[in-house]
Length: 185
Image (cartoon, rainbow, N blue to C red; front, top):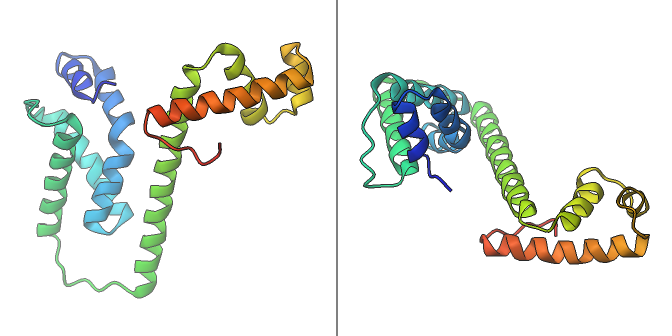
């Protein structure tokens, strides 16, 4: 998997799609990280955007001494620290606002984790044989019964049940290879 460095190189060479890929791959994680620094989801969103704007406008050099993600998060951290330095700490925040911000942060984090789980699951599914992939997709994603799946696949219900059993085992093994444990299996 490209860690973003290739996308950034393409962006620097004039391919705007490279930067779109960077935003797609790193926006949510960067936002959660910046939220942990600022304690405010809305501020973290703004600082995430500011980080990307800084990269677009200033085009800082990526030396490759660290991972691209580390480099990007360092820029984001510096943007957040600059923001916090400028911001007056004399503002008072009510306990209700703190609880609301915490719940927003939790929702954002949960959404990010769920998206990451989906990505890993789809990556693992692509590595399975087509019959396994088809049976899993129809049964679990399209929520069809085993009988309906059997009709579509032109197999017996018993055969579909066997395929599903083997497919779940193969999917679990594929996920474990990647170091990911999917609780739904």
